[in-house]
Length: 263
Image (cartoon, rainbow, N blue to C red; front, side, top):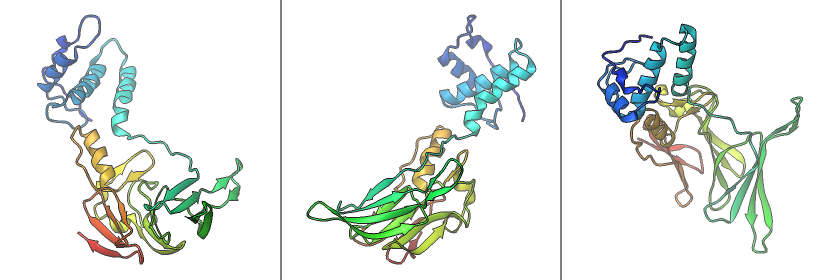
């Protein structure tokens, strides 16, 4: 990594050690501090302050060289690592758009010693006129965070929008389709994503849907996020739509799980 500064105005710092944000940003805008490969002057105050903090820590003489390096790492780490935390799975209910059908998803349960107590499963119910739930069908062996249940309670779509890993893989389920609990067809993220570099990585997962990555990329690049259509189920046409991070629009037939349109 190359550290170079060009005529950085350190008078933006007050004698008491405080920083005048406006004057500091103005000073850094006119510099060519090449930090993190940024060769152009900062156009946003936040980017300018990031550069200034990096340069200032690196050149602050009262600190020992090793301590300056540690402080610099602390400043830059949030930019390099896009943090996330894995939420422990918990029982969830998915309701059809009509409100008449529900699907209860139960995650697997383990003991502290790592022994499986309960396998992941799911149950679909119909709400009857008497207010009671009538069981329709069951699933087993998997748990999903994002599920879509059609209005007749028959078809279910399972979307895995944040698989564990760093890039699309044939082993990672992207979207799967079920008829009364039986798997019709599933598509891996590697099958749906053609440009692997388009996904956004977190510390333990990757995001591959356009509506996720558009906002994430815009945030870290200090740009205005473009609005992307979120995945959606159309029970009337029996279709499911999603758009990938590399800009491909897919339409699926939920009765077969097959791709009917790709553009």
